[in-house]
Length: 228
Image 1: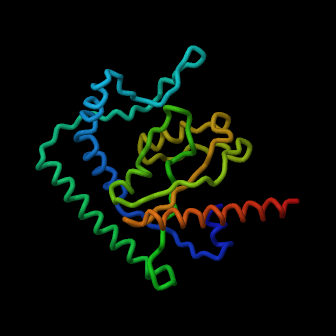
Image 2 (image 1 turned 30 degrees about the vertical axis):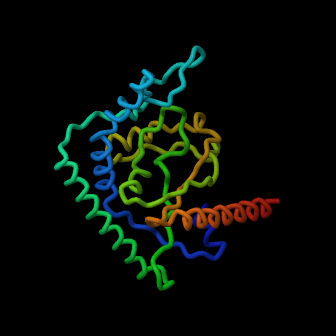
Image 3 (image 1 turned 180 degrees about the vertical axis):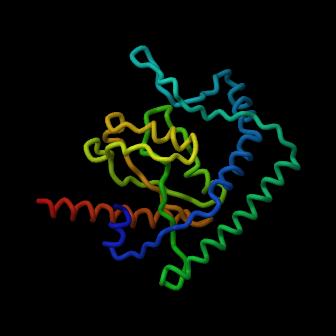
């Protein structure tokens, strides 16, 4: 829908080829787990409050599903030297990604690289509290220091968005993501995407997101009018 809307508004859209996203996410996780657990405990110790491990809402009228994800990381004990090696790997990958981005000048037909990347925010729509199990779709931009802005696209239609037949899964996480979806549970759940720009381009990202949002609004209006 977003691609169709942008093309209808006169914009050029090409397919983006991800570059070593799995490796970038691995590096982010190594950096995060090197001290975040200790940081959580130090901050909360000042008040004695517990460290939340999930956004699940459990009260007397509801029950936890028992399949919740915890965002509290396991503490990784690494030396300063080991951490700097990870940082060096990240810096090298950032350089490769910059070159990859610049190389799109050969494909855009505009004489310049792509202005932004439009990508999923997660491998699913908005999920019930406590059920978010994957941050890789945003963590990769943390590794690259690229600003991103999430924008709404549509909502789940239980009648149209039926669960597809099972397929060959890449790994256990892929299978868990497939099993998570249920049309009834996710009915009317927001569906969003993110627009990603380069480092230090926060204002440009906001401006481009407004352009995309406007194109989507015009597309939805014209589509609705054509059905009348």
